[in-house]
Image 1 (tube, rainbow over the protein chains, first blue to last red):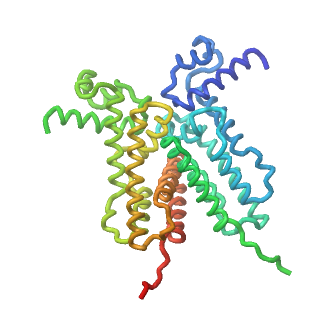
Image 2 (tube, chains in turn cyan, yellow):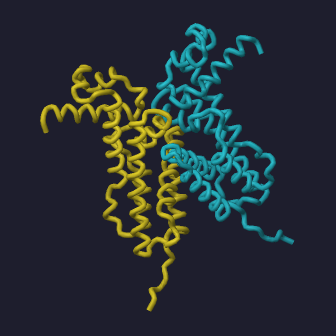
Image 3 (spheres, helix red, strand yellow):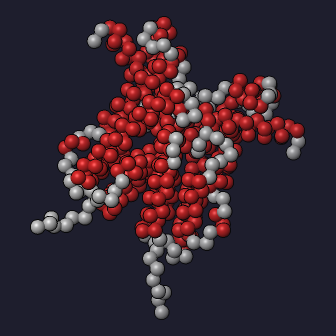
Length: 202
Length: 202
C-alpha cells in the first residue's frame, strides 16, 4: 500500500467513527482534521468534499458491521439455525466502530437529506436483505423452511424488528428490547417458518 | 394568548418541521430565522439556545405524532382490537409534521449526542410504552388477553417492529415493510396474545 493509500485509509477509518456517532451534519472538517492529525489540504488531497469522506466512511462502517453480523455463518448447517445465528450475531456482537448500526444511523439522517448517503444506505439494506433472502430460499429448496414463506417479507421482518429494537436499547441503555426481539423472532421461526418434519414420500 | 406567546408558538411549530427533517445538527439558527421570519434576537428573546428550541420542538412534534397514533382509540371496545388499531394508525396516519417519526429521528441523533434531546426522546418512548402497557393490562384483567403475556415486553415488540419497519419504508420509499410488520403483528396478536375464549366457570 502506498503512503497516499495509507493516508486515505486512515482518514476513512477515523471518519467512520466520527460520522457513525455524530452523523454527517454533526461532524465538521475541523473534527476530521483533529481526528486524523491532517491539515484541511491533506484531507482534500484525497476527497473532494466532506460528503465524499462520509460516503466512503459509511461503506467502511457498514462493512465492519456486516462482518460481525455474518460471522461464522458458514459453520451453521440448518437454514432456520442460520437465520437464528444471524439474529444472535446482531444481538450479541458489537462492531469495532462505535455509535450503533451505520445503516440505521445513516438511513435516519439521510431519508430527507443527502442523496449520496441515502443511496449508500439503500445499497447496504439491499445487501443485508439479499443475504437473508438467499438463506431463506436455500431453506425452502432443502425443505427446512416452509414453502409458504415469502423470503423478502421475512427478511424485512427480521431487519425491521432488530433495527427498531436496537433504537430502543440504545435509548434505554439496556438490552431488554434486543433480547425481546430475539426471543420473539426465534419463536416465530420455529412456529411459522420452519417446515414441519414429515416422512418423505415412499 | 399574548403576542409574545404567539411568537413563541410560531417558532416552535416552524422549528418542529425543520428539526424533524434535518435534525439538531442539520438545522442552523439561520434556518430558524428564515423559517420564522425573525431576527436572531427575536428567537433568543424566547429561547436561550438552539438546543432549547429543539427540545420544545421535539415535544411539539411528538405530541402531533402521538395524537395521530392514538386517534379514535377510545371508540374501540376490545383490547386486542385496540392494539391493532394503534398499529393501524401508525401504518396509515401521517403526522402533519413531515420527516418521519420524531422519536426515531431524535433517538438516533441523540443516542451518542445531546443529553437534553436524548432525555426528551426517552420520555416520549416511555409515554408510548405506558399507553400500550395499560391497554395490555386492561386486556388481561378483562380476560381478553392471555395472562401469560408480559405487557412491557409486548409494548417493546410492537414499538420496535413498527419503528424498524418505518426506517426501511422511508429508505425504500414504499410501504412494503410497514405493511409486512402490521400483518405480522396482527397475526401474532391473534395467535399468541389474545386469550382463548372459553365458557365461564359455572
